[in-house]
Image 1 (cartoon, helix red, strand yellow):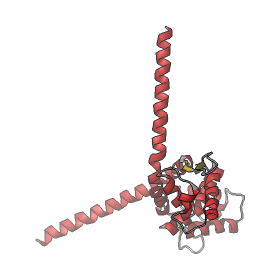
Image 2 (cartoon, chains in turn orange, yellow):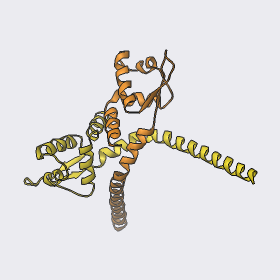
Image 3 (cartoon, rainbow over the protein chains, first blue to last red):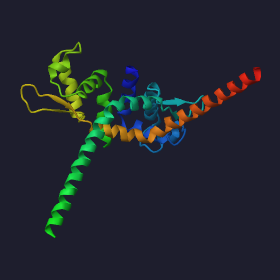
Image 4 (cartoon, rainbow over the protein chains, first blue to last red):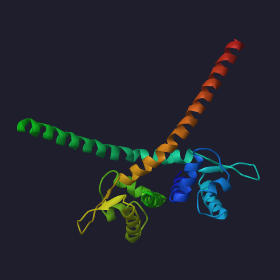
Length: 116
Length: 116
């Protein structure tokens, strides 16, 4: 699990690889299709695909000609589980901020009433 | 935002750095305290702290002697936002799996009734 998270996070630390995943979230695609939106050679895209495949984030079809890629969501679910323990930290902070904003609004309403 | 996600994911791709964040989730700590549970020199830990600080995942106090570190959750929230679009993919898959399990259970119950 630790090794998997290492590979997952490392694979996600590149904007091209994240863009490839975003494209695959819409459906399977071959290397040619994936390379198209990027100003990148097919070998460069293939290299990124290898990193994603090693991290288990994509799987490639058996079709020898096209070898279509598809997204595998399981490692992203592991990232989500890892994030869970931190989630309450920013949620708490947002609640604190909400509280401060409510106080400010109440003070403003009060001072408006006084001015009338 | 793209550059920030790059730095965040790269910083998270190391088990020591993730362990440091887990420790800091419990409260501020100095370099000495952070180095203790790891079989690692203080300079090695300091290097990891620099990566985390550059990624905005930790902030360091002004206290010149100790410079206590604290967790900054904002970049993790960005990871959470990035993950959101994929979340429904594994949730859908889990629902599908639940459906398959329900079908299996129903079939088993039916065949048991027949056997009686």
